[in-house]
Amino acid sequence: MSTLTPKYFPAPITRAVFRLHDSDSFKDLPDGFIRIVISIIKKIDLSSPRKSIFANRTTIAEESGKSVETVQRAIKWLEDKGFFERQQIANPGQRGSRS
Image (tube, rainbow, N blue to C red; front, side, top):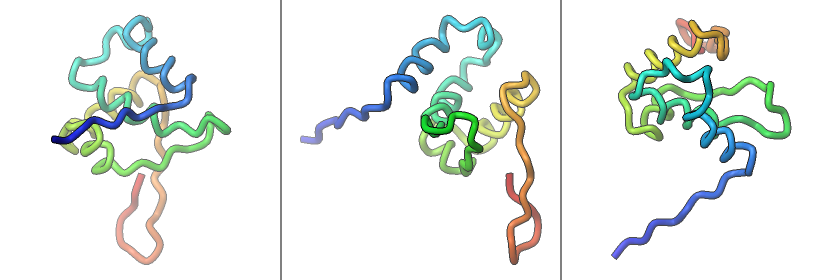
């Protein structure tokens, strides 16, 4: 029989996740995006909250149980609402860019 091992997060992360439901900023958040937003919030470095987050869309999709396409739509929604902005960074030695 398998057991569930609870994951503990620092109190500020836990509070942020629980307050999403009551936040006016997220009233328009599509229902399918909440798990993606939580996954992104859990990646915030509490010692430097304004520090950039480098999160692979595939990883966020796996953590949230959503498709990469849904993650992309959620990120676009968050950008359009002004919650964050992305910078494209050239991937050294490879064609294209990453964000």
